[in-house]
Length: 448
Image (cartoon, rainbow, N blue to C red; front, side, top):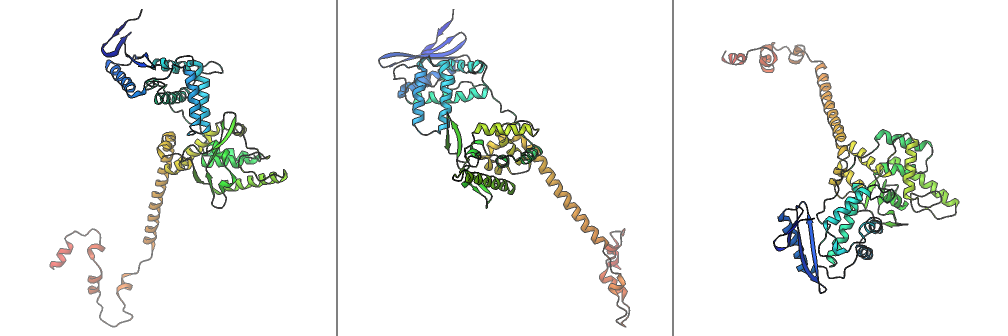
């Protein structure tokens, strides 16, 4: 038996929680809109009720025939793709979320019956039993990603008048803290590259390029030989190769800042030149045109991104190193650059981040190392300055001095009377030359 009390103007109180219940007419029928939250005060319920009424008064109430959540999400996906404002990989990610998680859990519900409590229950179910493979729970970050797509779909529904308000607004999402990064230090990077060199690893140039620049996997897979400037020692990152569903797509980088020119060191240039020579020889053997992409096999076939990751991890294991993801090689590059004292703004530009704040939030752990290196550099400079001054002072003190007689008396060249007393009074200050003289000595001389 539930207890409900109707307050004034549509505010309700049920089982210790405030909410609201209002109605409006759509297509000649009365439609009731309700919502409730155990965290609300009465003032919160009034504000949410007023927000819902303002949307209805503005013409954003539901005017369409009632449809299920599954039907709505299917039509939304079609419109989302046809709009042409999203990359193929983004659309495919949204399709995967809708078909794999949203429709199986709430697709049978009517769109108009969605409430905040329904959405909160959905996210809780996904955390507990959301995995389709074994029925286990999804990670909080995965649920947050699903929530972002679901919120976007419902927001578009509000704009089109399919639903009065967005029930996913202000829903508490699972707590997620960015996990600690697993990276290699400089010695481990050297160990990995040395091992690859010892076994004549075909993709040595690719591994070195990623570890030197922090390129994303998709950026490396999309890099063309025409993007490599061997003379200037730079690469131009202007496209990515990513998996979209069952197919691969060549698309633009993640953001505008991701389209960038990155300098590479002489050793990486040399390894890339060796790889190009090997691929050109293979193309000539197959009587094929020169291969366009950098990351290909010796037949000219582009390497699958997942295959690239698995090969990287097998090599790490064989080299006796901790096995990390290929994306962690990007984190490794950034961490080591910051540790070596590269300014954070420069690291952000090399990684393709829009601003340095993003870099700072991800790689803050590397700043203490950079700070220690900076302290060592500054301390070394100070010690060098002190030592240089001491050496100059020692040389000055050890230089031979001319005797006073040689400096002020030239008896061998003149027969003039000896004038030592007069010369001494002019050239020698007895107060300065003789230590321990009282300060009044000069004044007494003046009076005499």
